[in-house]
Structures are given as structure tokens and as C-alpha cells.
Length: 462
Ligand code: UD1
Ligand code: CA
Image 1 (spheres, rainbow, N blue to C red):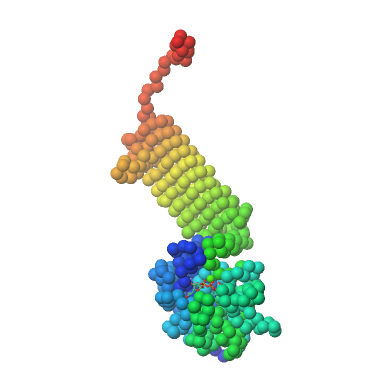
Image 2: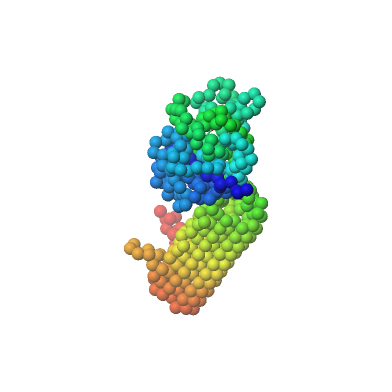
């Protein structure tokens, strides 16, 4: 016996998502850092290959197409005349000519590939024309209700707006995820009417039509896996579900997360086992956290690398590389192009940008270091600043190894401080400093003896 043909997946993503009250197409809203449509694409990829996936687009089609992998087919639905109409257009373009046709809404990012796998297996093992994925929910308002007859067989789906009082009391809802037999779907899709509250072609009506020709079955799933997002409130609920899944997976792998409900790690982030994450941490984009690193409380990191055993707290990191055992914070802004080698320190109220700190280099307090290279084991005294901008251009500050920059030194770039050199506290350094030298730039200190007594005497006189 030959294998059955690989399933086709049709993802419905043409609607505007009016109930989101947002200009961004609904399917592009992010869930755990990834556009919701891409979660659905990833789930579809578990059961089929890209050439068997078609996405129906319409509202702001160019924006939606732009996020899709190139191998995936798109079908354009110019006017959104309903979920049935969207599927009809795909079938007319030759999508899903045989085998199992899985239809998935693009607004259900929490739907897992394994659930689609189970649905397809269910369909393959049965002779019914369609298997629906349903869920029992406490608050079914807004969803289509699954109507069964007295012996429990599914009869049809009725939409909220078209339902009677007793139908509204049904708590089993349509998730809008279906596995159709291609022939059964093709036989009925042309018969869909628009005699309903929204005057649309409802894909849900295929269920009643297929029932008359060979049976309908339902697979009851977990509500957390499959409820669609229609509002920003539901977006937040699903975001929480997805983040909890990510956190759970990380904890299972050996990442210590103190409070998963206050930890926001995007799907694109890597955290190695052995790392510890304190509350109020946001890890986004291509961020990676190595083993033994301790991150948080209160860290926002995007596209940054946090090395083995590094300690980062109360800090914002953007496109930064934090080396092994390096300390960052509390209260640090580590901007684009900061590279801190092993054992370095970016301390309290310190901002860095486009700066390389060598191994063991330290900027402990109250500094701005930008467009700079700081050599190994050098120390930048409190309150020191690289004056990198002359009002027209940015210039570089180069500090050698084992340098001691005195507190409150202004380094007027371009300027170089040689290996082992010192600068005196409060100096404005505008010329290069030779290796091993001390550069001081300061007015001489004057002293007026007995000033306090004289002043007091003057005050007593008046
Ligand atoms: C749909 C189902 C409902 C189910 C619910 C589950 C219908 C008629 N109703 O309702 O039974 O309980 O999903 O979440 O199918 N879309 C298009 N073209 C269109 C219309 C919609 O591509 O012409 C897309 C949307 O972009 C969206 C998906 O189809 O991704 C579902 O559409 P939506 O309007 O959200 O349907 P619901 O009212 O939620
Ligand atoms: Ca929906």
C-alpha cells in the first residue's frame, strides 16, 4: 500500500480583525515575539511541507505576505466574504485537490503541531467527510456552537449571531480547525449560501452539508490549545499561555525561573540550562543566555548575548555582547555595539555604546563610555565620560591596558591613553597620554586661611 498523500493546509488570514481595533492586520500582532500567523505556519510545518501550505490573504495583503517564508503559496481574497469564500478561492486555485485538507484560522497561534497531527490521524482512520476540532469552554460567547443530536453525533455548527437561545447555552465550540476529505469539501463548497446574519459564506456550513453525505466527527481538544484571538484582551490571554509554555519548556530543560508569570522570553531566544532568571525579565529577538548566568530582576535585553556566569540586573541591553562572568548593573544602559570581554564590569548608572571593554576592564559608576576601546584590566573612575561628539562627528577614545582613569575625567575624543597611564581626577584630557604617564589638567588649588572664622566675624559685625 502506498502512503496517503501529504496533507494540504489552508490557513485563513485575509480578515482585518476589526475587533482588535488596530491598524495592524490581526495575524501580524505578535505573541511571545512572533507574529501570530507564523505560529500557525510552524504548526502546519509539523504535518506537511511548505509547498503544501497555502495562506489566504486579503486585508493589507502585502504586509502579511512579507512575513511568510518564500516557499509558501498565497491566495488573494480581495473582498472578505467569509471563511467559506476564502477556502473556495484556494480550492479554485488548485490547492487541496486530493487527500486530507486541513483548514486552520490564522488567529490561533497556540494551536500545536501535535494537535494537527492527531486530527489528521483521526481523519485518516475514519471514513467521515470531515473531522472538526472542538473545545468545551466556560465562556462560549462569540464562538460558533457545535450542535449534536440526541445520540451525540455532530449535526451542524451555528454561529453566535444566528443561534437560538437554547443553542447559545451549548458550551462546545468550533475552533475553526478542520480536517476535510478533499473530495467531500469540494462537493459541498459551491453550495454555501449567504443567508445568515453576516451575509457571508460560512465555512461552518460545510459541516451540515457534509453530514448529509457521509458523516462528520469531532475531536474534542483542550481550550488552551485552540481558542482564536479576536480582541486585544484575548491576545493578552494567549500571550500568557504561550509564554508559560516557553517558560515551562525552559524549566524542564534546567533553567531556573523564579516567577514564570513575570518572565517574558520570546520564542526566538535561547537560554541554556543552568541559567537563572529573576522576575521582570524581557528577553527578545536573537538574545542568548549562557549557563550559570544570572539575569534580573528587571532586565530588558534584545539581540544580545549574555555569557557564562555573567550577572546582569536592572539593565537594558541592546545588541550587546556580555562576556563570561561580566557584571552589568544595577541601573545600566548597554547600547548597540557594546562588547564586554570576560570579567568586565558595567556598573551603576553607566551607559555604554559602540565600545569594547577588554578582559577585566571596569566602568563601575556614573559614566558614559561611547565609541571607545578600553584595554584589559583598566579602570574608569566614577563620573568619567568620553566626549565623543564635537557637534559634527563622533570620535574614538582609545584606552590601553592597565590604565587608571581618575574620577570625573573628561576624555575629549579623538584621544588615546597609553598602557599603564593614569589621569588625575577632574581632568579634561584633550591630548594623548603617553604609556605609564600621569596626565593632570586642573587649576591649582588656592587656600584662604581662617576663612570660616573671618566670615563669621564679618557676619557678627552687621
Ligand atoms: C470563526 C468560526 C466560528 C469559530 C471561530 C473560532 C466561521 C463562520 N466561524 O468565527 O465558528 O468558533 O472562528 O475562532 O467560520 N477570514 C478570511 N476571510 C474571510 C473571513 C475570515 O480569511 O472572508 C479569516 C480571518 O482572517 C481569521 C479566520 O478566517 O483568521 C477566522 O475569521 P474570524 O472573522 O475571526 O471568524 P470568527 O468570527 O472568529
Ligand atoms: Ca476568530
